[in-house]
Length: 215
Length: 385
Image (cartoon, rainbow over all chains, first blue to last red; front, top):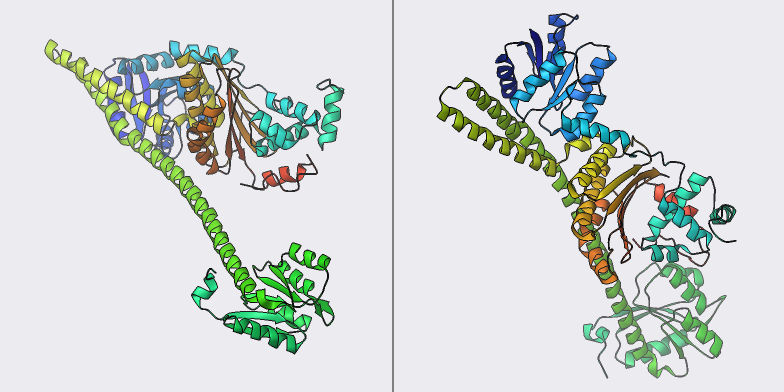
């Protein structure tokens, strides 16, 4: 028998989930909590060692959010397997939940049978991953999303550097790039900071040395 | 001869007369009185007394050139230093053309010779009228600037109120509507599992479809009001937005960020999110682009978000229109957090929308000090807001 604890701040939804799981012969709901404090009390009462097989946890509770609870449980070294549920569609929270240590993510507004399937999967110690989530995971592996661009100059910054080194004035650069002078100033300041220089002359020298402009 | 505004008002003029000769003082008083000007003419001839007198209200100053220990030009200088909008008539004996020209250049309203005072009365009235007009013009200008500022503040407040209201409504939908619909779906599913009759099950199946689409709708509405993903941070929200944009439109979209974790003041993430959202909407609707690049960076205390597409670009005339209408909302929104928006485009070379938000109140001042672009730009680049 798979033992499940529910934690969701919405009473009617708890009942809905409870009824759904109760209709599955192999699942038994052993406890319910409306927030993190109640959950703590419940876990304490049920005993530290294996109070349940699966914790069904809402991600969007007032006070401590589901993700925070996950982090706390993980930090404590808890062996609880958590299935995150939410009213938001998967693509927004699923990856984060999985990264935070959840065993799966289910949209409460979907087919209730999915919930049963997910609980069974997690109870076996496996992560519950839908094909859509799997697709997102794969995409996040190969996408060069967070390039460490800190030391490297962006295209705009490079453009600004070259124009300054060519002797153009702030107002001319602003006009040519169709930006306000303030914005050009921002890029200039960034270039100076990233390259460790202090004024336009040094910028020009740098540009010439690095063949960015003809000397 | 036109009747001056002063004459029409019939007011008594208070005029300071800087003159050491009491005789000349009486002559000028007589000249003015004969011309029908109602005037209180107060004579002073010591510089300290004159300077002290400048603190009191006068309609005009008539000054001699040669005075004991000082000149009329010094009085004029003092008037200018105090930035008084004061008609100043230099009335003197022979002082030479150069001195006269210098006086006029320095802001004297008029210069008259003592042996020819016929022009004195009309010159005085004219000078006072001109000063009155200038005063009115400046007041109107100030009022216009203040009015614009008020409008700007109001727009900012409206933006903030709208966002706050949206967040509140999204929360209510999540808690009340969304929750109840979800509970309803669970109950319908239970009925479906426990009912025998085919008609009942068929009806429940239909009801389940209805409630499912209601749940979808409420999720969509919640998202449009206040994207939940934003609570994960701006970077997460932009990552999600970029991926979804590419999935939905087929336009290649790439996000580049300097750091994963950004500590941003409240209000800034939502402004950046909404700006990106609108920019991407425009890209998909108008640009014909094959690729869009989004870059977020935080350096030197300034946040910039650039959305660049390789589409057909915006022609100069349309750019001006864009700048006034399409971008106005984005600019006002950016202004609520102290930032601004640039729209840069060349036909055939794509379009860039750049949001800039200084994060520290002195970040922009620091930039200003660092500007050594050109010695002939005498004023700050922030000279005009």
